[in-house]
Image 1 (tube, rainbow, N blue to C red):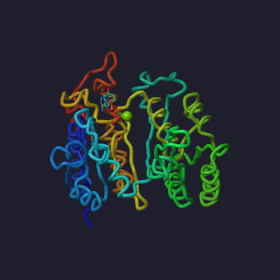
Image 2 (spheres, helix red, strand yellow):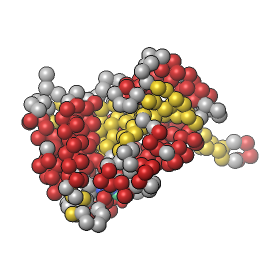
Image 3 (tube, rainbow, N blue to C red):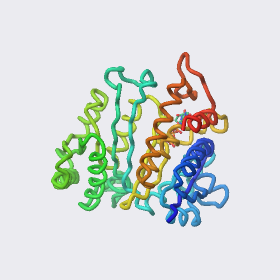
Image 4 (cartoon, rainbow, N blue to C red):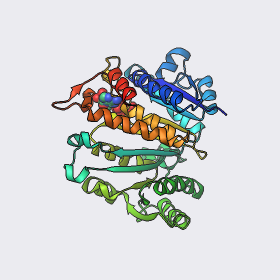
Length: 358
Ligand code: ATP
Ligand code: MG
């Protein structure tokens, strides 16, 4: 049966980078005879302008029906002033994540040797860096109830949120992480704050319990403060890191910076059955939109992740990653990763170079 891919270009540089990723996906679809049916729909600011809402019913229906979703980016200053938070571009993304229960966020931080100079760390500390952060995306303190700002005695206002995970939520993200570790270097570090927060005492307990099912994976635990420190001190000690929503948000941004190039990092958000939404880690970059300056490689690498995790075409994914490495070897650089002696190219030139390398 043919599989179905939904493409959501979104806002800002989204349409530009997605155009390049489409070239790659179309070529792979053809050469590997994947028989993919590829459709496009509106999300984010583009959807607000056309329909009044960031996630039109038609888009949600198409997302439900798809086997995988490729997203550019959403958001921009022209929608940031809307007083109704439901009519913000970001709500479109959050809506897809929660309706489809895309709880497993995979964020690789890979340092391409050709770009080692761009890292904030010394070359010997980061060379060969290849870690995967697995972040729980639909629970934890970002979604826990009750939440709000209330007035207590004496008219003093207090803000409050609830940090909650049930054992099933912990188990399902744990499984994603153990499976990923099994397919990689077989080391998994679970990050928590079990010395202070009960919810993470349970987190640690469930990870230990799961570990018995994965005796080939070496499981360790780290408190989040130490993990942040270790990540910038000696990041190569990590293979796969699994953590909750908030800790993962913070750690994965820090890990991304170690690679020095936001334009190079893909991400995946998976449900229980391996269906997923794939997108670059960066945002819609309104400052460079429409100028042909955006780096399309994070989106092209997101296509590789999509092929690997949702479309079971790992071989095609490997080829795309190799092609990206080839264009870097050729000295081609978009502005964000430009350095002396390299050749600066546009968004489309970079996409075409990857297609040629493929
Ligand atoms: P968001 O809130 O959606 O994460 P943001 O404002 O935090 O957005 P980005 O949109 O990722 O961040 O932009 C941060 C900076 O990185 C901007 O200067 C932008 O131009 C640059 N940038 C982001 N993505 C790319 C890319 N693909 N190519 C080149 N530069 C990029
Ligand atoms: Mg941001």
